[in-house]
Image (cartoon, rainbow, N blue to C red; front, side, top):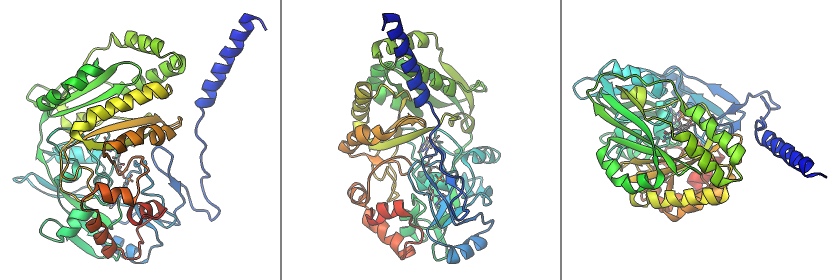
Length: 460
Ligand SMILES: Cc1cc2nc3c(=O)[nH]c(=O)nc-3n(C[C@H](O)[C@H](O)[C@H](O)COP(=O)(O)OP(=O)(O)OC[C@H]3O[C@@H](n4cnc5c(N)ncnc54)[C@H](O)[C@@H]3O)c2cc1C
């Protein structure tokens, strides 16, 4: 073979490999043998064929359903969790018809909201009454109950996850009773089921402590990875919200800060994050095997990127549109170990996983007192690692999770992890009490699917 032919063959092989790697993941059949339709989560890795589906429009209808429905009974929100919390062969239950604002208290800045309300609809509804949630996650597609049930959070040194603002909630229990839960009424259930994984019953209404509606100034800029890691404590002290996305194989981070402001509105421009992600993918595809070249080209391209600035109400700016699908693992670490853990994660990826191109996200969350909150009595720093939905994500378990475990990380309930009951009983000081509350509400485990049996009962 001539040299030119060899180069040609190698080139064709590389192109063939890229096409193969870029194929759509296989889809399960749209229905099973009994004709039950497929349900799938957002990223596509979880699915099941529920025997029954229901969308009750009132608490009475819901309570009636719970008494007779086939188990496992699984509430679903927007299906944005990566863990197998939702799949069921029994009843799949959505509260999509139980959404919207119920009432509010203008003086106390409190609002009672139906649990099926999507966060994206809640923002404008609260703004109309002069209120806002103190913080929001990276997207706003989730249902309020789904977000609270997994400890969904944004970022901010003194700001809790969403469930930290929950003053009370109503729970339709597995037996079909309706309970008001707050520090004054059914306090044990309030503590155990506030971050409840949909395992204690169905949350129907939530009362939130909000804050006055304000504009924020949000800024996104590229900075050096090590410089931001070193300045992390000062950045947290300086800004109401701060987070960063560390971009592997570039030495750069996208630093995002947000602070209350009286500046005039400067609306956010067109969304660019998804296009940037696809550029990072192209760099991976072209230069993944030659890290120094990948870094040099990335830095060349990034040199021209100007900071993004915007001023508007928080609900319009804090969440983003994430239309490039991925799978994700996120652990919440004792705050002082966040940066050391992140640096280990970054080094492991850059040493072993040239295929990774998604940025790694670092956020901070204040402590709270819900028994199953990953932030229970622990101010936390989170580190989240993503894998493109077409790419292999096994490295999250083999390479990344052992690092998080060594730092005593508690996994996000909605994101990939391999932990079970034994791990949780060690990581959560009130685990035993929470399990007792769950068992009393659902003695026969009608709300437990196989994954929740692993979590709560240690069954594999
Ligand atoms: C693109 C993307 C971005 C994300 N960004 C963030 C982020 O910034 N911060 C973060 O913390 N997480 C984030 N997540 C994770 C996500 O917020 C959680 O997985 C959340 O639980 C999803 O809400 P959902 O409405 O889709 O709930 P689902 O995934 O449908 O359900 C989650 C849990 O809630 C339970 N549940 C739902 N409704 C009820 C109810 N009425 N009563 C009782 N239990 C109920 C379900 O049974 C299940 O256990 C992200 C996920 C994706 C896919």
